[in-house]
Length: 248
View 1 (spheres, rainbow, N blue to C red):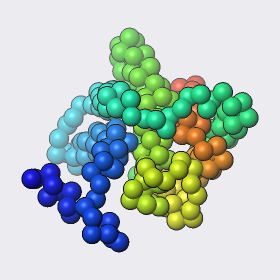
View 2 (view 1 turned 90 degrees about the horizontal axis):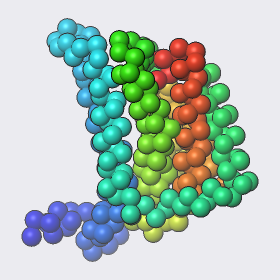
View 3 (view 1 turned 180 degrees about the horizontal axis):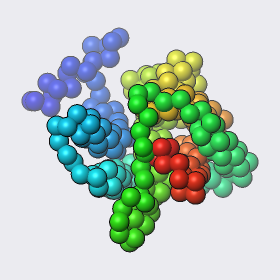
């Protein structure tokens, strides 16, 4: 009864029929990994704010604990729902032309990212694993950070942004919209929202535009994941080789 009452409030604006619970059940696997990841981001931001105002002292190693936890938590959710991600077709990566475009677009976006250095809010110090005293712990954290950035985050974000949200903007029943369907409203809104997720907002919007264009040109979430992974991996290698930890 309670479940029926819950779904009865989600009605399509042009219909008297209840919102289809099966649509919600298909949205959850694409939204929950992102929500879990962002919840940990929120905890980190709140702890940083309270620390700067002398309210709490989370300790200097707090960020190095939070990131592995959020990466592993998001990965666990992705793995638990792995059987339902029918839109991720890794066979798409065998299309040489599309994969080549995705790789070069990812590299070009990396170059743009480090040059479109305009952030919102105070500039942070970033994620600097060299502050960890133990050599083993430092390299473990670096491995988790790179894996999270180059594998977990691209899958998690592309499922949310390019599989769920960009289609949900077009129609509430997002799964009835083919992957890669273009509308100006979904293209613009998804690009802006993606940018607002990042501190480097201009670079974030540029990334949102590029990943959307990859989606439209290839009709493939896997190609979006590849492009996103190349950007993040290149950025991680750049950060570790130059010490520009503010980009992390």
